[in-house]
Image (cartoon, rainbow, N blue to C red):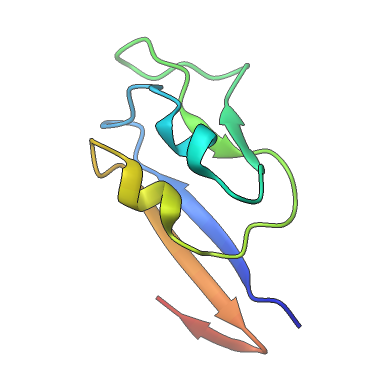
Length: 78
């Protein structure tokens, strides 16, 4: 069973640069079309199932706005 992941984007820091979206190997991220942050940016979010919690999005984020969580076979890891 492949690992399952999820992300949390801190909208205080996200500037909608899309580096995470472009780097996501699973292609499950996009900028929110409906939401705008207090600073006027569309924040990144998961838009589809399939996140594996690989952490690439967090690594490429210049603002350190993404926290990745990974769940493996019933065991939660952070």
